[in-house]
Image 1 (cartoon, rainbow, N blue to C red):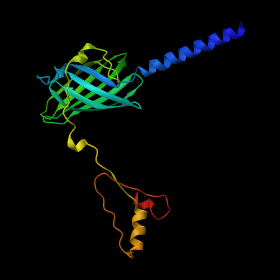
Image 2 (tube, rainbow, N blue to C red; image 1 turned 90 degrees about the horizontal axis):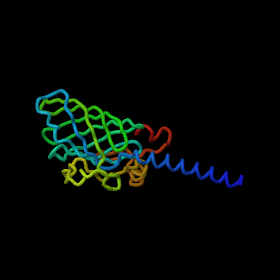
Image 3 (cartoon, rainbow, N blue to C red; image 1 turned 90 degrees about the vertical axis):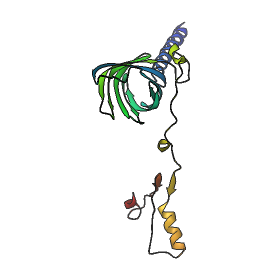
Image 4 (cartoon, rainbow, N blue to C red; image 1 turned 120 degrees about the vertical axis):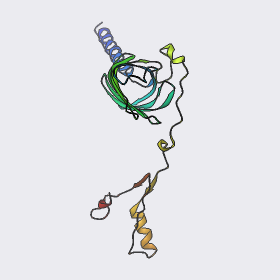
Length: 208
């Protein structure tokens, strides 16, 4: 009987642990969210009445993703979450460019807090926002609003990752010595080039 009681205690502890883990996992913000803006002050034409749909990905407390604003689909979102506190910024890059800053907190499948927004034409708004989760990170629908068609414009060319070239100075130096060229050593840099430096005292460290 005593052994049976110990097993029951361990089982209860295990279930409690699994509950805590699953509760923590549910706080992951990955998925699709519907954001509503309530303008309290700023320019007469709020420009935010249609709200946003944001597609978020969370990793290591960091947020990134895409966002719409009415018919616009050119928004790029970055942010972070610490506990229930959430901060994010959405940049709509096309003309007129628009920058939206969100500061709020998570409560289950809802976010709420304050926002400010500024536009390249000089307009400015501030107020409060509410966000409802539409889908989970796996695409499971939580809110029927997720059935609404949402499109994001293709990623701008200058944001697409380019192939990265790695330059090894030591290999370059050795090749020059083998070819008999010893007086000139040139390293040419271009975008997305990483210079690989080896930890050899007094030789390569100053190139870092």
